Length: 453
Image 1 (cartoon, rainbow, N blue to C red):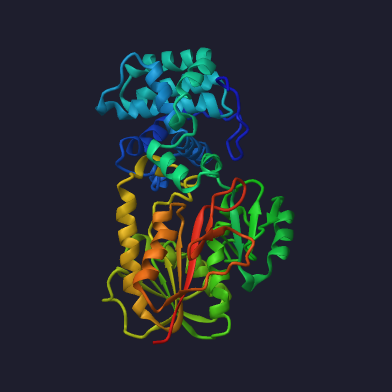
Image 2: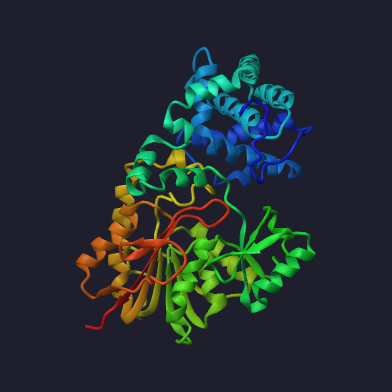
């Protein structure tokens, strides 16, 4: 792909050139610094001061640069005579953003070069304008040759760290390249229609009336996927709680718990590690239950409360650690949803900074935390009750192997994960969904029943 050539990626701003282009690129560079230095994520992008008309481009620069970071950094090494010093990580980030614009975005090359280089002045690094200008101009001349050179490294060509490529190849020898391709493509915007306000077929008509094209999800009965992402405030009835944003795979938790909850009005349900509240809300939309939601992160728990308020729903929210029981009132639950903390390896396309921030040493630590959660929560389930274990991971250590170990040490646990479903594939005691371009994220589910003693 030559410099300045669009790659036709869905969701990328087209032909954008802004009066505030220098400030916009400087802000994007500042936002990228914590990621490239391994000290933070893109979570707080909304905290950066960017005018409303430029926010879409700002986010496209930040997320796009993270998504393509291995190739951007390899090219930067080729273009620079000597690397920047550690204190100039903001200039390094600015160069990476410039490279991303030239190779992946529909921005005229003169704007990508000139405004990116000029943005160095707003970082108080005027000396860097000439360096960045020279690097980007060289890239416009030699893009094809330079990319061919750096792409000899599979980690660069597939835009994934080496450790993760190895893990994916070992876990999914027939699918690892497809997983990488899905991870490198922005995920679609999928909605969950609130059945209390009508079915999804009727909501499709409302979307059509608003000029938004969409299609029904194949596996989630309340799911609708937009052809083109949009601001949530454009969605008909969003403020009134008629619809929420939630990936199709995540919506399947309600499908799996449906046979347990639908016949039991007033069932007592625990949603452990509940933030940001998508699954919490979905269960309350569908079932007459007494729901208790627990999360150890107070800030994220506040987001759950906000979501419930918008949807007109109620649950008992508790700030607590699900590896402990000091928050529990002693009354057993009929069902427990454990959406366990995990590597996020199934949702990299939505959180591309995971590629840089996640380390191979994190996986055993996460697996140990998941085991502690399972062991702590299982006794809170009444005999005959159901626990649904879920992760947004594609790594067996967190999924099939985790459940295999739990079943081996828990004699009263019996797997009841359905086999006659059209989604995912068998994975030990559960089912694994791999991320699919233009479809669902990567997810794992395992449903267990506690046998009466």
